[in-house]
Length: 207
Image 1: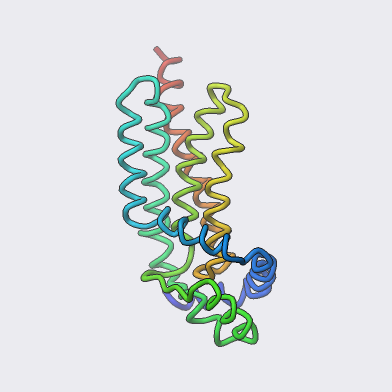
Image 2: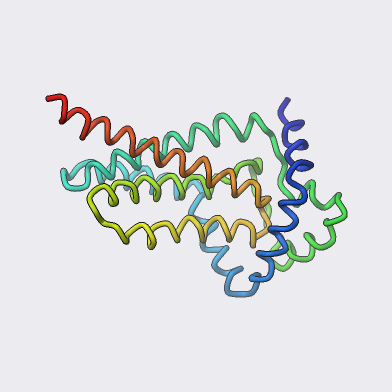
């Protein structure tokens, strides 16, 4: 049942989450907190609209059509999995709701306050910010690698990694939320690339 699954995750990943929190909090400072505030907008409603619009616009020119198709498919796959299926199905509450009741609560509370004591208006698992950015940039990276832009992926994949890290530094997600958001995002991006490949390359070979 929703909620019960969230409690199972809280227990199963308690050791992992607290250890990763402590690692990332070594980097919690005014700069990274400010960066987290910026990255907060890379997964909100406006970011979803922008990601969708950019993907559609890239489909129009023939030169960028493959990237646009891959990104658009990745966008919808990640959206379906995270927002429609997993978040409501698992029902995991945010760490500032449940983690405060654990022995780690005082330590978490101190860093959550340092980060600005931010609240989010949806469930916690998995991280939508992380999944969206990994989906979009994985799809784009895969397309660019296909056309031999070998070094581009290093610069592109830094973006979702930073977004995921700042969700932990901001204390609004469990690290395991970010981990599974990354996995879902990468998987969605690869699905987007596969669909693009079937449309543009597989079909071309069968003609």
